[in-house]
Image 1 (cartoon, rainbow, N blue to C red):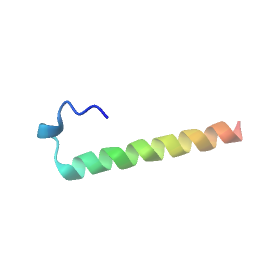
Image 2: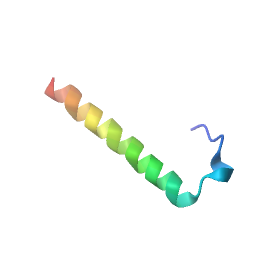
Image 3: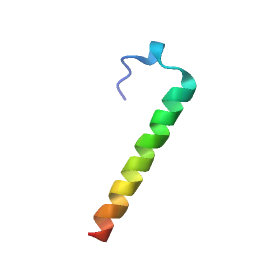
Length: 35
């Protein structure tokens, strides 16, 4: 993954971003299966 602003982002914020990213992918896959 690209990491341009890793120095300015704290570890917890980065983990939250990764969790939200995985959650968005999961929701997108479920919605695609429903359609």
